[in-house]
Length: 95
Image 1 (cartoon, rainbow, N blue to C red):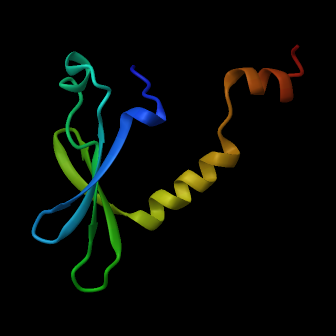
Image 2 (image 1 turned 90 degrees about the vertical axis):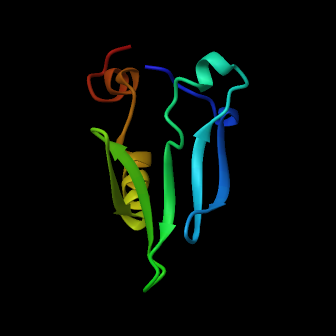
């Protein structure tokens, strides 16, 4: 697994039969950057109701999920996900 810092995560707005935004990695190191599928994901607006969808790749296929579901997941994760060290200290009372 490779973890990227905030500065390596880039966004751009592109036209793809309508406006989309894309998230991608740009570290400045071509050997790292070329190993990452581009884009990481895209955001599309539904033509009929402007609901935003995040497009992800899974198992070689593209899927779209409502951006609102992703936002809810991120908000949940902000408060509910902790490191192993946090659990050791706060749950298992290990120092």
